[in-house]
Image 1 (cartoon, helix red, strand yellow):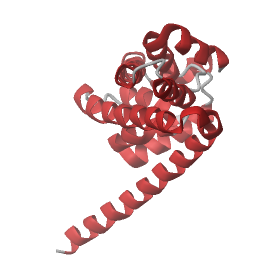
Image 2 (spheres, rainbow, N blue to C red; image 1 turned 135 degrees about the vertical axis):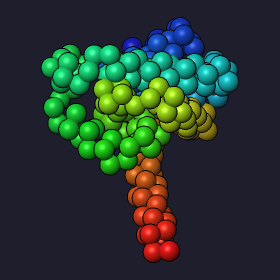
Image 3 (cartoon, rainbow, N blue to C red; image 1 turned 90 degrees about the vertical axis):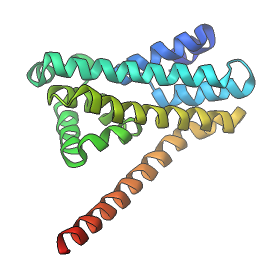
Length: 197
């Protein structure tokens, strides 16, 4: 992790872009910590917040787009066969598949907030041949919210960012899951009302 933080300090926006692209693609990079650190560097004046956010957003978009392309053009059997190369265990793929089947394209909005799901959702949607336009609309909106959330938290935390970094991730994951639960209840109620009319 120290290497990633050093990369951002040394290479700035380019380092942030590359690391997030590789992290979202599935390499072992602590994405949230990098985003919080970029927010901290922006608060400190080492980076400017607007270009840091743009680099983070574009890196996330590039990573998830590459994952989608791999899934679309390589296919699920190859992913299952060679998944160990990106530290993908069969149980991760099974959990991600259940998540995607349950939430559909909407899972792309929140997949970034859940490690493991983030790395595999795009592969699964690519293998399922979800249209590129639908994929982009939902995945890129998720990238926007995810990048802005963690950079904003790092910016707000300032010098305290190291204390809050692990807590931030756990808290946001719980909040996102609660929001999904509330959304599923709301959608179920709306569907029941429509059927009863």
